[in-house]
Length: 341
Image (cartoon, rainbow, N blue to C red):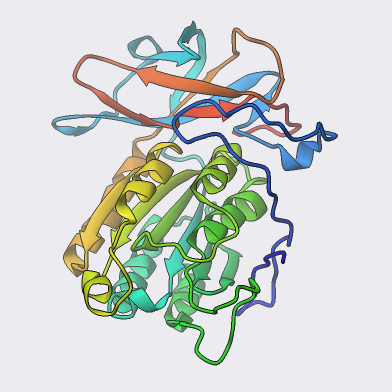
């Protein structure tokens, strides 16, 4: 059964289409597909923006003292499939419009930490949103709900966050058609946020995922969710916030979400921040994300391989010795009519 977003606050629904095509294993090139060839729909294969064969790449750079804001084009190198590329443009993009998707885990395992997420998430958006930025809010549990569509009003987002509540499915059932209502549709939420909401947006795009990392019942998986984010040129930050006692005391198995969340974040150019169930650490995690957004660079290059063949191209960015670069692991070489800056 196809999955759709339940528009709990604004009666808005995202596209119902969920695709079954498998993504490449995160961190490497995609496997060859044995599926019969299908006509290419450019709307469904939009990627990290390639316009006039120009690839735009956002990244941040740190050393032991913190984020570095004084780099120039000659300080960094970009490799596509291990081949050095010529950087055409290199700027620091702290003022470029920002689109933020907040994905809020409202499954039963988050019952004791949801109030922390609501308070810190609202404060984060109040601090980071400017009039030229936009944000939206999605909650996920046994369903995926659009609680607030695009807005630059922190007050509107706060009202939507405050309305979020835990949903374990008791007496309601799930839109997925699963045999049991119990579940956490984490990967479906990531896929829909990236594919249906962010894919058509320009500029910097990030998803902030507040969750314990557990998924149950999603039609999508780690690979397809990662692919959707990579194609939307969206950076994913995962704030791991968990009531570990839920897993140890309720017969819900062993907590095992950390590793998958690490792959989801790093393959899209983001990272995981583990805060446990500590409110102060959660506030610090949002502060760290703000710092990164203020120190991002945008580098553009025309690939030495000019083919627009839809293949996955690995990317590696290096700067000065002792500096750690945080960037996506690759992109899909597919043409697109719009620019990304």
